[in-house]
Picture 1 (cartoon, rainbow, N blue to C red):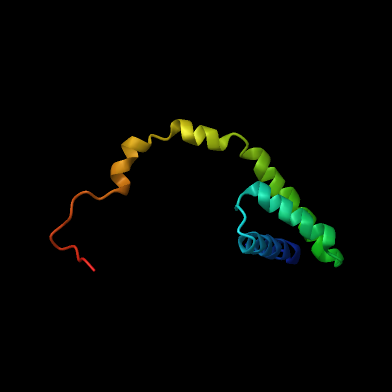
Picture 2: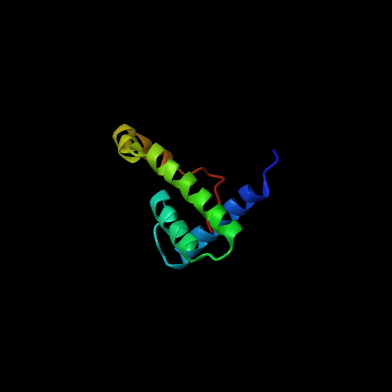
Length: 99
């Protein structure tokens, strides 16, 4: 797949925004990412980067809209008790190493 320079720049800026959010110990989600990208765009002086930031904001906001009620649906359909056995190993094999 061939990506344009603007697409690559947009991806780099999204990564930069995520790193800034992590540095601030903020939550990583689409909403916080959109806010951080808007802040970055408002202070950016380079026209190409500002354009890529605006494009990134639009892409992330589209993700926010498309995933609107997803989290509540996931919680409703998730059966934690039936999945518990997948996360907890209650049996130990004789070949398992203990460190």
